[in-house]
Image 1 (tube, rainbow, N blue to C red):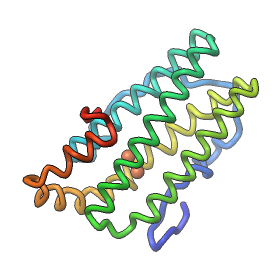
Image 2 (image 1 turned 45 degrees about the vertical axis):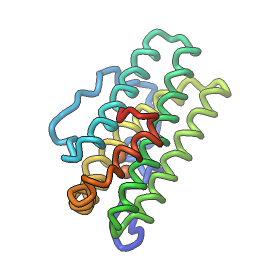
Image 3 (image 1 turned 30 degrees about the vertical axis):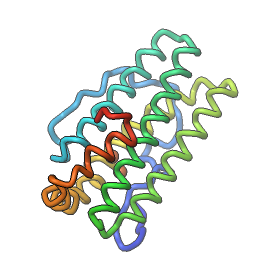
Image 4 (image 1 turned 135 degrees about the horizontal axis):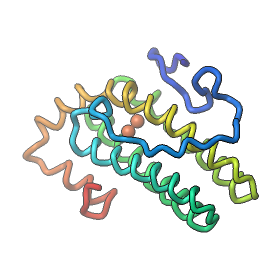
Length: 181
Ligand SMILES: [Fe+2]
Ligand SMILES: [Fe+2]
């Protein structure tokens, strides 16, 4: 854990104890959506579910061994995650969430790591898929359960008072082209 801006964050450059080195084993289990992943903000939960779908698609693509499919899913996952993070940061900004700049920084590190794994994969290191799968399961899930959960009270409060202004639907339209997923 790292102290950033007065709060502890799990940064993507860290991995859970003992999971630093690639073992060559890919966890092929599908990641199941469990209740403890719900933040309680519907719009965010939908987006997180979509990311979990991408993780499972990446597992499926890896199972086929088709590099082109893996690459396509990988790109889709990166794109969607960037859009989700940007949307989430906008929500935090609007809500005046105290740790928003630290939260943004940990998002940034994660996106950088994702990009590095993708480049590695493009350069011919197929193990990058194993590593990214592990990072998604460790870091992303931890981030959703802890760091994202932390901003929820502030965002819920803001959404409660913003209901009539249409800010949320405008924001969804801007990032997701009129759809919230
Ligand atoms: Fe999130
Ligand atoms: Fe986040």
